Image (cartoon, rainbow over all chains, first blue to last red; front, side, top):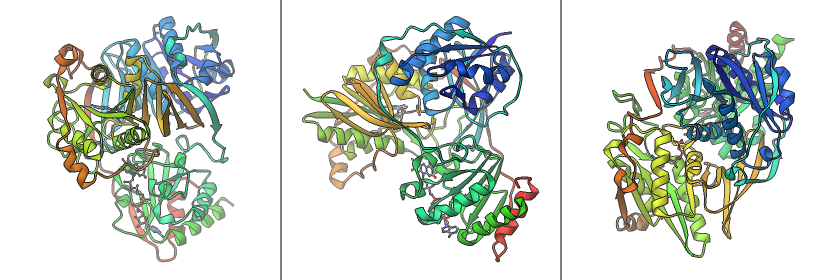
Length: 320
Length: 261
Ligand SMILES: Cc1cc2nc3c(=O)[nH]c(=O)nc-3n(C[C@H](O)[C@H](O)[C@H](O)COP(=O)(O)OP(=O)(O)OC[C@H]3O[C@@H](n4cnc5c(N)ncnc54)[C@H](O)[C@@H]3O)c2cc1C
Ligand SMILES: Nc1ncnc2c1ncn2[C@@H]1O[C@H](COP(=O)(O)O)[C@@H](O)[C@H]1O
């Protein structure tokens, strides 16, 4: 069976969930071979093996942390040369897309970004994408070279599928471009203790209606009662009420959770672009005409300052 | 020596309008209103600020697109860019990101550059890969997705706010950068700017001007094929209740019925 390369997104050896989802998708197309780079690369092997990686190619070098994007492209290119895979799958983060694109160009292949599903086809893997703010669904495939496809978080279930996961050292020669863009400083984002926005099963968001940074405590309390991540509209972010890293929408994060709760958010097209594919959508908004109500499975027309705290209390009471 | 800045801007269908596909499954650009991609306004803005801070700089805006794409160039010129280049050719219809990056790279080389500035993503394709591809083709550093940027003594510095960390980046010119919508509000064209833009030069180049063969671009030669495009079925109308004092409890009841609590 053909091998499929899966680029591993990890932090010091801790594999992030989207990579495990990629392994599920990769198994539909071939045998997953994982590529893990940088500090802690070898520590990823056990988790990857548990989820179906037959092999884990690893390479550790300071360059991966000290320079932007290109060292990782060099390594992935070396992996493609070593394995001759049927496809290359990369998590759809901002960096993942850039790595994938440069790789595709170098190996003379086409690239598909932001797939939300993947299946085997007669002429290679077929990717489903959600476009124009999720108002259309397309199916596409790469018609030249080895398909390079980036896949959004929450596109597949994480499945246990034990495989060998044999660790092999990848040999990488860095290109002249590898050291072009230096990372001169890095401030890790402080953990809030809440789930990662793009990976969360439930997202609770607040918009302009929240009316002030201090009021976001109401949104956070609801999120915590459900074990959810907190999101915000751009209006709330621009007003300085919540960090940009939590923005949902076209220029923020794109989320696809089981449940999305929009509070005081009108539902502008750019916001919908980032949440429209959520399974269940719920909104609280005092304006019955707000476009968000066109999307909801359940909506409450009312003042969020009344409805949200009551909801939080009720959830806590029911959970005991 | 003068700092030569090239800003890549895309003409896109209006996101607030009704966007759809043409019969050949390319983005329909004929039957819809278009405009300068809002995310590229931030690129123009940063170019203008960098130029204002430099002793001597020239800002050229570059677009690859159909006839109407001139509107995007006009807008950028009225914001304050100095001149514009429009790459237009019948054979470009349906070109994908890989092909677009080829055309942009050739045009940027022909124009001459020290710094290329792009938007974070186009509002229609939203791939966010063209700047990285252009950097790869030009063989220069990629300093992308910056929320803050400055250029001094031939070095570009900026901040990239990623998922896991916020990174401080640095590279020598020539380089390709892209800026996010966090980089600073884009200015509105002034009346004077709009008048002045009418007199600014707009060059038109076709594929032969860039030594690109027709078989390197276009729908036929794209590296990807769209096999089908279907409008997402409208979500089935949900239940909407008016809060009469029990709205939160009703919502909790719904969430419980869906097994979320
Ligand atoms: C290029 C571009 C990119 C963009 N990217 C994004 C993006 O990534 N994400 C994004 O979100 N937006 C984005 N936007 C902005 C988008 O167009 C909207 O302006 C934004 O989403 C509006 O945020 P909002 O819904 O919170 O605010 P508003 O549209 O002002 O809506 C506030 C809502 O709160 C309701 N409300 C007020 N008070 C209460 C109360 N007490 N109780 C209940 N309801 C109340 C109101 O009825 C209203 O419906 C982008 C715009 C552009 C041009
Ligand atoms: N046809 C085009 N003409 C000029 N610039 C473009 C074109 N397509 C993409 N770009 C630039 O590349 C950026 C990212 O585009 P994309 O990768 O398509 O999301 C845009 O913000 C533009 O700066």
